[in-house]
Length: 373
Ligand SMILES: [Zn+2]
Image (cartoon, rainbow, N blue to C red; front, side, top):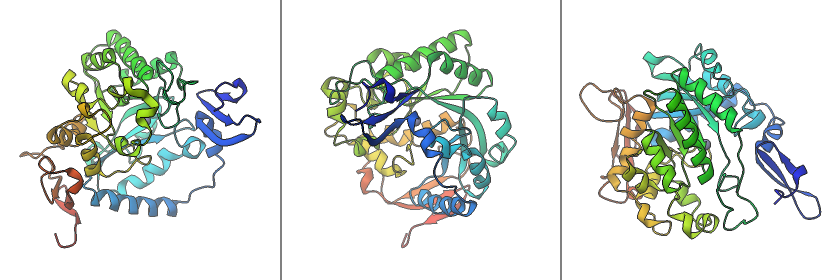
């Protein structure tokens, strides 16, 4: 890895070179942004075809509402290729049957006002643009999550911070003062501690109701869990990682930090609202597989497993609450919208992985019915 070569580090990213000085092809975090800008253009036909097949898949998986992260500049996981993401998304959103929250990835919170003047924000029609995401670090997979101590299987690096803390605070404050929800990507324990510290500063300066969230909250120390609880932050987590990272996660974080990794039970016990998400397109959108991972985690800190009911809440009531739609969506009650999913069995009584979606209803209308159901 090239972290010890200063010439390979760009702001918030790195290009990896081997010992003989040849690039290995591995490009980490923000160093990928200029490269992605070199990809060929995507046509509107490509986007429409992609949205149609992806929408069908979500319906088969029992999804009725989505929150989409969307770039407005080259900053973000799509790099230069994502510069027009919000423009493309605004052209597609009305073709989707779901309730759609859009979360902008932008250095300029004023972009929210600009894009509110598009189909992304039609609150009466189930489209809201009301949140901003920023990234404090990278990923565990890329060894770029920002950790207090080095990775156990890569002892020469403890990851990296992808955004200057003063700049992060400036964005958080602008987001909060605009009445928007701030979504802070934090994966490593140091990044999560930083997120809690920044939110603490923010809410001390500007107390009041909020729907702010820590995205991923992957590796946590005890003090940070308590702080997240005290500040009323929601942890938006992706239990499917427990499947996809199973073959290397324990080696990467080491035995000691493993119990604080995807620490769903500790978060719930501390009183933190735990909302489930997919992290698509990095991870699968299969909700039942995610429920299964949250409930059954035999090798990865089994004491952090949660009950089937708590797992179900992550993807229904808690997810709806952090999206600000709890008065309309997320539970079955008189007066709420008839968004519901018919399952082959009770996922709190049998392994969710053995359950199948039979029918997906949005606003009282069937959008998916399984063959033979
Ligand atoms: Zn993220």
